[in-house]
Image (tube, rainbow, N blue to C red):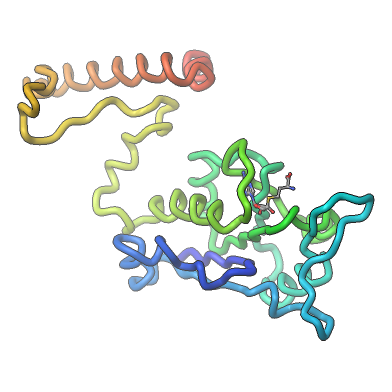
Length: 228
Ligand code: SAH
């Protein structure tokens, strides 16, 4: 079972979309478990202050290191991975999703305002992970993205494990186009090869489509693929 522990100022956002459908079922089946920690419950002054102004000036506020550390220290056992969702972090990708899907516990810190104090990142050995080159208002939606990608890799979550192996990024390429019934729709037919029943030919066609799409849309992935 994977335990996802979320440190947030908005625990009511969770499980949100992750509580529905296959993921809700997987929650009920205890394939994964969700815990939310409300950072606000760990303030140490009577005004329950979670944020303060930044040293050196600037208009933004930061989550206080003492409060965040207190919330971590009261909830974590040692040696668990702690990730802070941050635009400055290492870019999240399928490989990291796979790596994290093998952990027992992942702790995700959702920032707000301008983020969190640098000292707590260092003092608690927190790894920063970004979901892309854009700035969100808070880490919650980023946590949803990461968990969505991770949970579907847990054994038993998706009906068809095979489908995971053939997806985009699995072999360093984007996925080939896919078709379902009806065979003719708005006068467009399905590529002949897919109706041929010739599995070797279908495999070749899919690979060449994957290659063409990747070359066209993602030169970065294409360069890597060609090297391997
Ligand atoms: N001042 C920060 C941005 C803060 S955005 C900077 O320039 O780096 C507020 C919060 O949203 C962050 O603390 C982080 O938790 C979350 N966030 C914003 N963009 C994100 C991204 N691309 N990936 C992951 N989390 C992000």
